[in-house]
Image 1 (cartoon, rainbow, N blue to C red):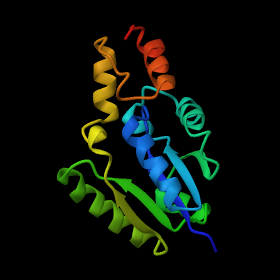
Image 2 (image 1 turned 30 degrees about the vertical axis):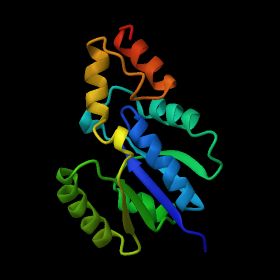
Image 3 (image 1 turned 30 degrees about the horizontal axis):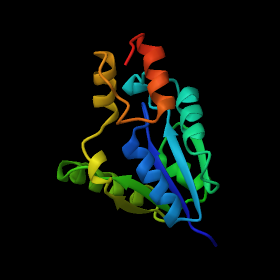
Length: 162
C-alpha cells in the first residue's frame, strides 16, 4: 500500500512557505493531499472554493498532489482519505508546542496517523498568511512571499495595487 499524506491548513492565502512544503512533501510521498480546512471561525479572507482553486492552479505541475477542501475534524478527514501521514510545518520553536499538542490529539483520535514536521526554506521561515494579508492591506509588495496568482487575488480582494 502506498503512503498517502495530507498537508492540512487554512491557507488563507497560500504563501511561498506553504508551496515549498507542498513541493517537498510531493517528493517524499507517492500521493499527497493538500487538505484545506473551511475553518469559518477564523473568518477567512478567501472562501474555501477560492482557496481550493488557487492552490489547484499553483500545484498543477505536481501530478501526485490533489487539493481538497474539508470541514470537521482533520483526524476524520484523514481516515476518509485513507491517509496515514500528516505533514506539518514548523517555522520557529514557538510553533513546536502547539504542533506537538495537535499531533498527540490527532494520534489519539486516529491511531493510524503519524505527523511529520518539516521546516521551511530559510527565505520562507518568517512568512505567514497573516503577515502577507497585512502587507497587502497596506499596499505593500507581496511578490516575494506569494505566487503571482495569489498576489492577483489579494489585489482584487483588497482593492489595493501592489
